[in-house]
Length: 142
Image (cartoon, rainbow, N blue to C red; front, side):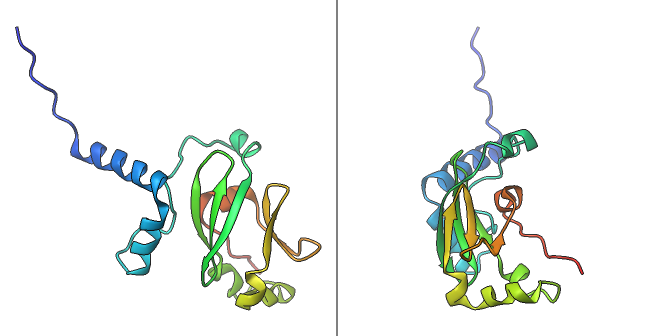
């Protein structure tokens, strides 16, 4: 008796290919976003398996300025995110002392310290790892 080959779910195949491509070359996704193709803002893949407990062990390994107020952040578990800080920096509810970082020259002056992205000598601006990991920076409420 011969078995029929199982049909592969095209959606699942496409998802696997997208994950693999994002891991191998996130610059392609960034470039397609710049051309306005509607690619997702988050680079890499959404790691739905990361729990709050995992977040205690995940930290920022590397961060690189891309353009405007967008950083490419690599985490210690290998996940890479394209994080846009512009909504936070330009929100009316952002505290005035942080508005200095809405100047691109000041924004570019970040560093990775103790597993986080920080700005200022005394860590004037710092974001929770779960926010960075999600790729969505919360806008402060008044």
